[in-house]
Length: 245
Image (tube, rainbow, N blue to C red):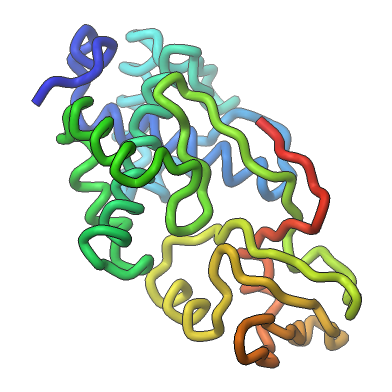
């Protein structure tokens, strides 16, 4: 199947594409956690990809030699502009596929991550364009993760972690994004109605690390309790928040 011009020119292996995407996603996760350093450690990559640290070190050297990452020993690795462009292409494939698998094929949002991982390397640019049009040129995937454009651009609303908010019974919140691909957590959140687009009010917070009390606003409003850990996986927007690029 025809790949993008850049991927054809570089003739990248699937392993290389996986590393580039993982570096991008680890940096993205660090930003959501409030960490400003764009560099990703060898240990973090090893854990994310499930490969030995020695193998990670060898691959990083190859990526650096190919001009896809910048790396200094003991200081971590970051994507070059070319590496980031390739990473965003794989992220786009992955997130479009997740949306296609949920909206068209009928999979649950907790079932699509591994399927998209397997398919993202294989789809052609024509297939990517067709599912993009079929889905109405979407900007987010089923988990609320932004879908980059073909040019690697995206916008997303300014968001806050639910776990960081103080209770306010007069303030309506909207779930924008869920920061996990863990199947059991996604199923749990879905059972509570805590999915992207859901509206809620944070009613209270028990002391000493106790649960957060929520009212989920739907046709039949429901009271829910979730742990601070789970609340830390949910990013929300409030009325009037601007978008960021």
